[in-house]
Length: 92
Image (cartoon, rainbow, N blue to C red; front, side, top):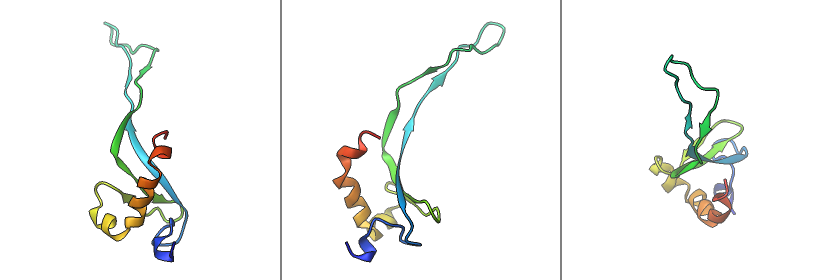
């Protein structure tokens, strides 16, 4: 990969991390007296397949692969990277 196509931060050259957002619901019963139960039930994580991206650990640059269309055009190698690693990323 050339320097502009490397999987590093395009601003500072720092190390990137890949992130993906999930929804998890936590519920607690409420008694008739208005007190919360000590028991917390948590749902299985629901994956937002579209909410993912990259963030620099050094300068905090963020690339959201869904909402940042300009960056998608500017950094197609990052989109290509996610496509090439789809199977690995499913387990996150």
